[in-house]
Figure 1 (cartoon, rainbow, N blue to C red):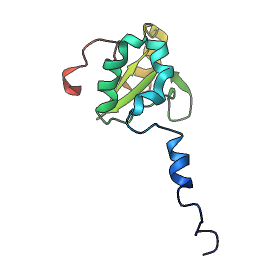
Figure 2 (cartoon, rainbow, N blue to C red; figure 1 turned 180 degrees about the horizontal axis):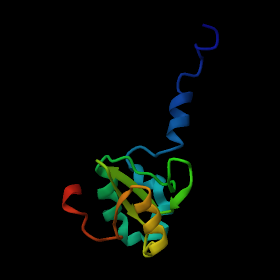
Figure 3 (tube, rainbow, N blue to C red; figure 1 turned 180 degrees about the vertical axis):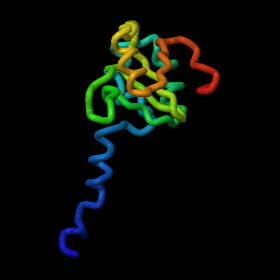
Figure 4 (tube, rainbow, N blue to C red; figure 1 turned 90 degrees about the horizontal axis):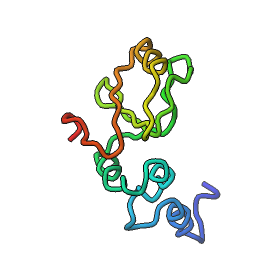
Length: 119
């Protein structure tokens, strides 16, 4: 097929290399999260990222697209959502919206030990 062959086979590697520096790990791509949590949370955050869970940095939404909560990051294990809001706590209204939409949420606080099912 025309256009598939290239005289620059390293071009793709160079593009990929712009996203993550080899040997430095994925946390370098999440400096914005560390800025919000504090650099002292780097090890704690690394443990979460190394768990190979699908970490989301988008709002938690209802099936109709309504934004229910805006944590710094969140992930799901089985049917439970684990969310980090940083040093702030979600308000009662947010927690009620999540509950009303059938979302079982566990708030994880920066630096705290993770629940046993995540360890």
